[in-house]
Image (cartoon, rainbow, N blue to C red; front, side, top):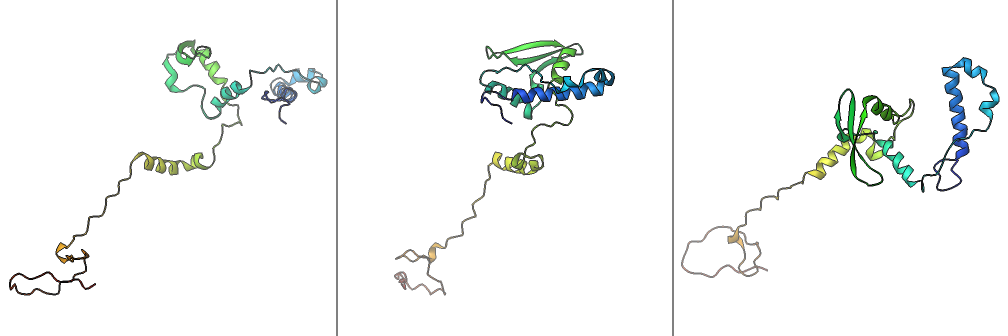
Length: 192
C-alpha cells in the first residue's frame, strides 16, 4: 500500500502495525513470562509511531540508497584504527566539507552495526548485465573496451607494374613470352 502523500516514504498506519507485530514477536521470544503478563489488547490496539517528513523525502531516499548496494563505510574513509579508537573521514552535510571524526572502538562498532541488515534480508540483487554470474562476461567486455583493438592491415599484394597497359592503366596484359630485342618498338596495344 503506497503512502497517501507523495512526499512520505511509508504509510504511517502500516508502519505502526508492523512495529507492534515485530515488538510482540521479540518480547515473546526474549521474555515469555513478561509477554504473558501484558494484556492481549495491547498488541491489537492502535500504536503510534513517531514519523515525520524529511524535506521532500528525496534526501531520505538518497541516504537509504547508499546502503542498498554498499556497506556503511568504505576502507578508503578510515584514516586510522587502533584497539581504542577509529578515525574516519566524513562529509559535513551543512558545509559539504570533508572532516575527520574520532570515535571509541565500541561506539564505532555500535554505529556500524546499525547499518548491518538483519538476518533474512539481503541487499539489492542485480539481474542481467550486473548479476554476479555475469562477471566473466563483464570482464571480457571491460577488457575489450579498455584495450584498443589493432587489426593489422593485410600486406599489399605485389603489383606487377610491367603488366599494366600504358593506355588504359588496367592490369590486363598477360605476358606470354619474351621476344628478342630488335630495337625500339611501340608498347603493345590494349585489346579493349
